[in-house]
Amino acid sequence: MPAAIACQGLTKRYGDVLALDHLTLDVPTGSIFGFLGPNGAGKTTTLRLLTGLAFPTEGGATIAGMDIAAGGAELRRRTGYLDQAPQFYGWMRGRELLMFVGELFGLRGAALRERVDEALALTGLDDAANRGIHGYSGGMRQRLGLAQALVNRPEILLLDEPVNALDPEGRHAMLDVIAGLRGQATVLMSSHILADIERVCDTVAIINRGKLVVSSSVDELRERYAQPVFLLEIEPGLDERIAALLAALRAAPWVDDIVWRRPSLRVVARDPQTAGREILAALVTHGVEIQRFERARPTLEDIFLRLVRGDQPEKGTAA
Image 1: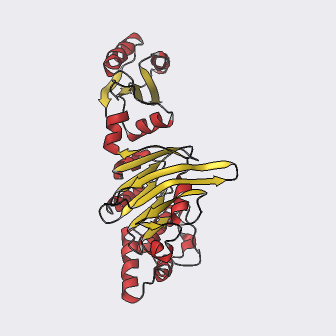
Image 2 (image 1 turned 60 degrees about the horizontal axis):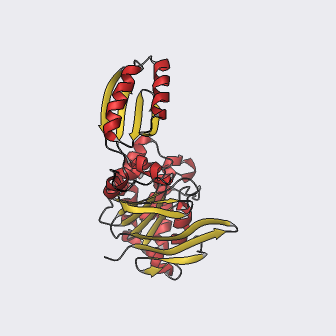
Image 3 (image 1 turned 135 degrees about the horizontal axis):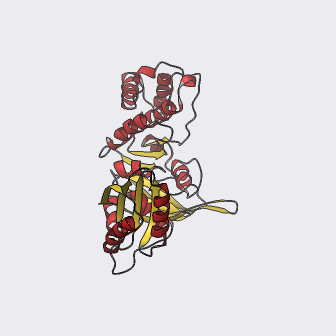
């Protein structure tokens, strides 16, 4: 099938600042596509270009086969968009806003009421539908933003940090809604919470400083770039010994990265055989007792950090 979204050399300059640098990217139809990058990488710029809120300096893109520069009302009818900081008329009630948005898409009568009820139910806002938006919390406004993006049952959904303002329970519920759209719509979702992307997305793209670093399925990324990761849970009360252990591990040539978040120690290694042997030896040498020691499946965050730093696997070595 043709790509739902296709960017060809998409570029955006703001004066002397190159915010997006000739991005060429295909988003497969029906996928839930994660769009990753550090702050300032160009994620929001890309989404603003795709929605027509900004205009490219060079290049172009198509959504559902329509040029973003000429798609007009038909393009808007087939897409939904959630800004990372949605703003609404505070004097409106939640249901009123969704009715208003639905009317902009040409919905009327029973069809409009059905779509509004559906969007409220999906986003868990049924009980707050008749309350003024001015009294909504940040998380509720975020869910209302997703609801308005879903009113027209879009083929393609563009979400900029959709769970940014939600508490853990709300984020879990919102991700379930997004995951439930698989096969019904194409979702392009940017986020800085990599665990969320890993949970719901089947394909991802990583950009850095406006340039595409990689675009691939999550499984292919793990196969190509993931390094061995060892997880240790340290016994409490060993601060001085742990400090010495961390210093020794950081100096080891087979260690790529270390994350210490009490009581867990995460070691990303270049050589799994050496790492397994030497970590245990270092624990004995420094008298550090552990409750758990295991080799873990590398996360998307491990891969992301490696690629953003510019690291690449060497030829002939395990990634």
